[in-house]
Length: 111
Image 1: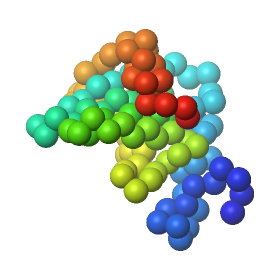
Image 2 (image 1 turned 30 degrees about the vertical axis):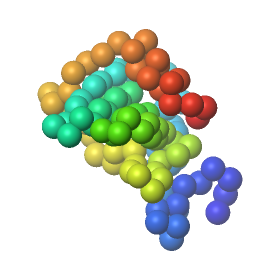
Image 3 (image 1 turned 135 degrees about the vertical axis):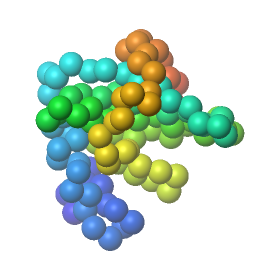
């Protein structure tokens, strides 16, 4: 396995990594989103548009205990969760500013 390559369940390379990295490093405009659930969990997404869909390139999850989990092309998954592998359904999300997203991302620690 190459350096930086993610593994799914420590069995197979995650084939999404090159695509997510390409989208993240593109000059495509970014949009930022917020969602919350009934248990007190919060999700923030940074997305780019591709093929008419919004794809998450960075994601922050804050669970009800206020534990922060961050996902991006360099860390697609961990024992807690993973970067969403489906296009975002933006009609279910609230758009937020880039500054708001970046503040939460930075508060989660080094990438």
